[in-house]
Length: 137
View 1 (cartoon, one colour):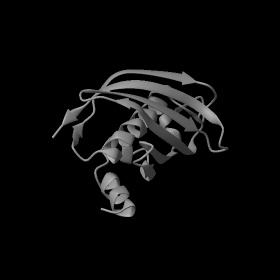
View 2 (tube, rainbow, N blue to C red):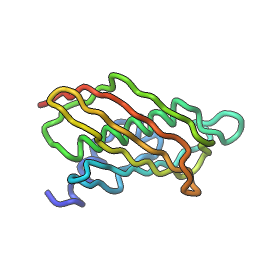
View 3 (tube, rainbow, N blue to C red):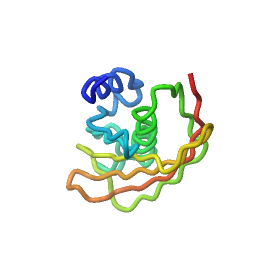
């Protein structure tokens, strides 16, 4: 499967909770074990006007970090998050955001991940680190 087909397959398998955030995989690098997703967040996911709620920010980071693993290995059936830490470095506002997720280290049953969320101006708004359980097919 070529890169475009892989991205299409990843997007076809997105869960509804990511689709409602208008999330989509736009790129991945299997060698670097990284993935980039774009989201377009409406104000229905905001508080205080156009400030994206922290749980939504966390969901975008979690999804992108997980897709870095899904893109790198077809044998992964699920990747439940065991632990996640998010640092909110600036405001995340409604509109387009870009998220990059990366695998730091992958073992047979556990994977360590990191993610960065960039706001519409390209500034870092949040960073995350996570540990997830690898469930193979």
